[in-house]
Image 1 (cartoon, rainbow, N blue to C red):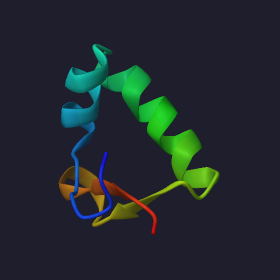
Image 2 (cartoon, helix red, strand yellow; image 1 turned 90 degrees about the vertical axis):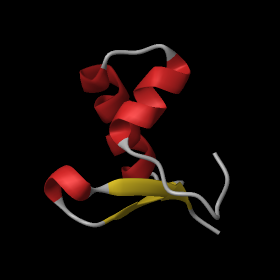
Image 3 (cartoon, rainbow, N blue to C red; image 1 turned 60 degrees about the vertical axis):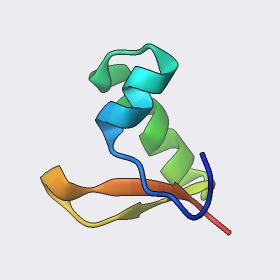
Amino acid sequence: MTPDQEYKTSDIAAELGLKKSRARELINELVKSDRIEAIGENKGRRYRLKN
């Protein structure tokens, strides 16, 4: 991931070879630990690295 790009859950899941549900669990942990940030809401939500 790069800070200047935004990623969907499905992008991250595909890159890591995981199911979307597992990728979502990992993403939620990263958001809580303040390593990545969520942009948008619900179906249009994307993620990017925090600066």
